[in-house]
Length: 263
Image (tube, rainbow, N blue to C red; front, side, top):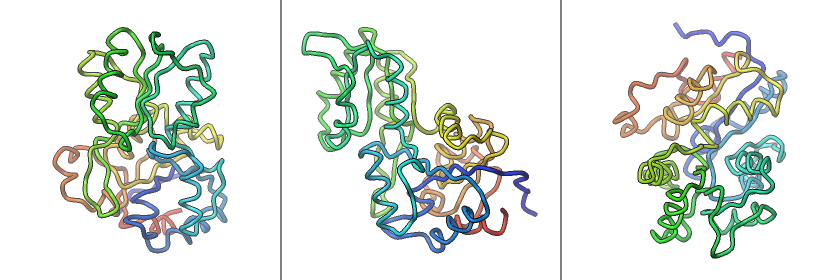
């Protein structure tokens, strides 16, 4: 017998692997989003996508047929901007993709001979040179605060093949410099709490639904929120069990559409 979710007002919903996968919408995901909204549930579409600006995440969902607005989305890029905007006099070094660079153009950045206060590492796979990562490492070694856009060890490409993700690179720099990074994406608990602030929902009134045991389900546990695992995307991949088998969700569903039977 499945556990009951209890009273729920808000849903933090993962995107890739939960709503669509390998370029196709997961069956009945669009209809389920509409159903949940009609029932009055508040939804934030929460992602670790850090290679492109938030508007591109919105456009991807729109192109798939989901009805979303910019304010419905929460990404690590949004969280990083929110964090560093608290320190208008501090300068940063951004190791990010060309697509994301314009998101940070209004923030103070270092000149060639300066040391930054913050080193921000996001997805930079469009120019994946070790020299760029090594420069970030040198700055952190000299005292800059290391900020990572997310904690994913790997992601699945369009063909469903695993590839090293930003979290692994941030951990490498952190280990080399012997520092603790500030992660402003999943599975950091503050990331989930910031997303809930957008919709005015407390942790005990929310659920997180996603396909990744480590970023979604472990993140839910970190934040004190019930985590629901879907057996789509990463959730159906056997190699995930190699190091995530101890991370147990509150509930496991075959797909996102099964929420209609529970809420």
